[in-house]
Image (cartoon, rainbow, N blue to C red; front, side):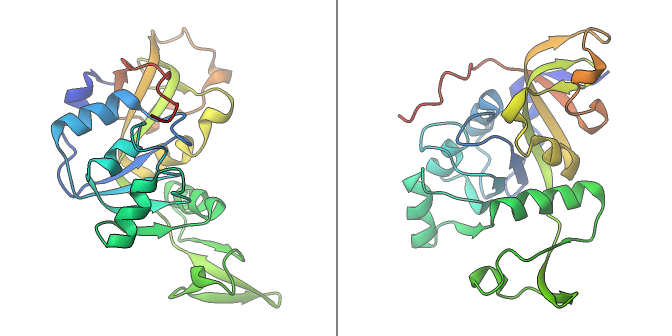
Length: 225
């Protein structure tokens, strides 16, 4: 059985300067309850890895707006103007990663790989400082694995062993993130007893989950405020 914690208990381990992955896309699939608990706790100088920074007052965007992030890895930040402002001012160090490369780097970490080879970025600013390899007369960039100390993933259903069900597109990079972080907290809309979930519906096996939190904030907060 995995520990079932309050959101406040679950984020207690996240200290100033910790690295954190947050799943979801444009706020959809963000772990709202955990993010609010982390904001309340006051953790700062975080290294955040997330697909995008949503909107200033939605989900992961709040971590940016409230100046909790020192270093950001993301695939785009255009929907959150605060992210661009902080990047341009130098307040936040931003590394923009092509979306496919971002997901593959996380997957590589979770799978124990030394990196991934991709032609994406050849001839652009993306290749700066990276090792190139030529395979069958074609150039590739070596992209290194990307992992974190902590990860927040959001599930529709989770059993007490930590097995999670994430429907349709809400899977996003959450499966890879669960594999690539040291301590993974799942926020679930519904928590069920072992045996109540169809094994064929398990999206993230419980072996990757460290703790479970019951979601207290519904996904109605997705619109930009």
